[in-house]
Length: 216
Image (cartoon, rainbow, N blue to C red; front, side, top):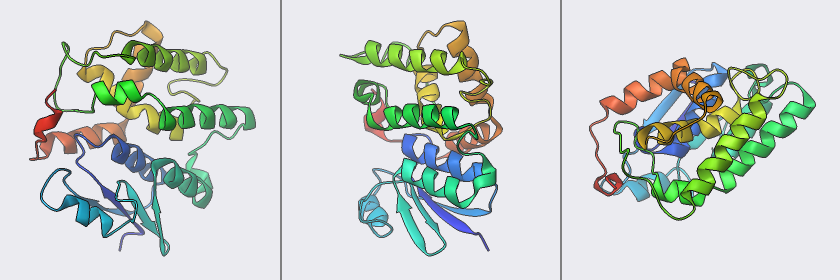
């Protein structure tokens, strides 16, 4: 029997689901997935049956129900300390939390004009007010983190919650053809080629669902 259950939206479209899934995958525990296709039938009621917040992802473990990606990550980091979900070094851990929280709370223009669509490429789309500023800030974060001792191939050495938070952005940059400097491209390639990310991408490619309003 699976030790935990995670409730997700479509793997092609749900950026927050990707973040939560990468975090629980990092623990190495056996977990069960429930995918609720977004924008299909009574999907809102289906999600509300698991969480009063009505949003995915949702983690169920040890009698607890936890929603919000960062809360899921913090819970998993505390419950499975050997998984390395945060860097071991105090300073690196503080920096990782800062950039993860910045990603969680900001970048509204990027989210609005570059919705995640992992199966397709839209190089002539994705522009809008504030997008260039958001892209520049993301690239600056990556550059700053990668310049620190111990970084590479991921932001703080090994894959951690901060990388999970930026994984959907890597997908967005590929989908919309965002140009990156060599350092940013190397980091994005490392995330894209991370084996759990490849597993998610394969599942996204195999999904039958299409959300028409994502065709911007």
